[in-house]
Length: 47
Length: 383
Image (tube, rainbow over all chains, first blue to last red):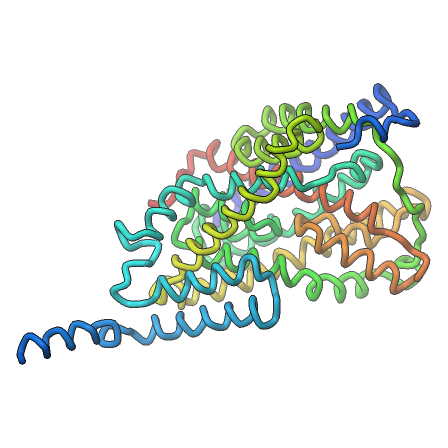
């Protein structure tokens, strides 16, 4: 078994997936702070 | 008279050329049709797949996915080998998904990462069982719980495993309501499952909903460009939906494209399940490893759920961890059901849908990272 391939893939794969999703949570928080929901928005902006 | 007998002989050629492997596959095709039509299990997939299996294994019909020049071979070559079908399916998926619950409670996005852990455990197991790197990656992606992603990766790197991987991926997605609950109950106490969470329905600004697919699409593609076709189409579909200005495109993405591609994809996958390449030991191993992958996704999701419960001082129900898979919306429904079973006043669906959509993003990211690592190591598709 090619352990170096398997472990590289596991650590890189899991690590980058976790980091990316964590960065996305920060991005969403930032967007929510910049553009908070305002009452009445639902009526005019809903798809 | 001789000409008449020759004509009759040619009519029986199909029977003469029917091998036992083809007969078994035709029987399997009929079982899939029964499950789809009779039992209504994933009929949108099982009916075209089942009929594709029957057509592809009929001798001399030239309808197998590998029968050069045949109608299904043309569709298979144009739609699956070029990866267009799974990519288009993501456009439809994006147009159907509501990221609202995830945007309102972004912490649940992390569950979407834990829900991919099974991919990597399975990768190590597949390598240990002797599969080469490209095959191991393709089998492991079953753990993404995401049919189009599994097809996308496998059609790129290990085409000979495509029938087994795609059938396993879709089968286990459908079996999530059976696979996940025992693991969820086994890994939590009743008290943990009873953990109440606010009913949700927190509102998110429409601007955030519009900006998210654009910014997240750019960021994730910059991080892992190999996943660009899937992530790009997912985010485009979602942007069409949230923009609110292209109703006709949303309609065609959600319905016409998604339905047409599902039909053709199912037919082609079915027609690629030929006796000679499907009735093998490797197929059984792929199914076994796929089961482990999805079980491990749930196990690691639950472990993260328990950790998050501790870190949040009891505010997060650990069952949400099971919704981090990409099986949308099956996993979210399972979480809701198990939550209410423990505490009838519990309403976890809104939070679980958020984790489940996070799983969609997580599965594409995990696949994209694996493709990037393969490419970085100079490992190309199998010949």
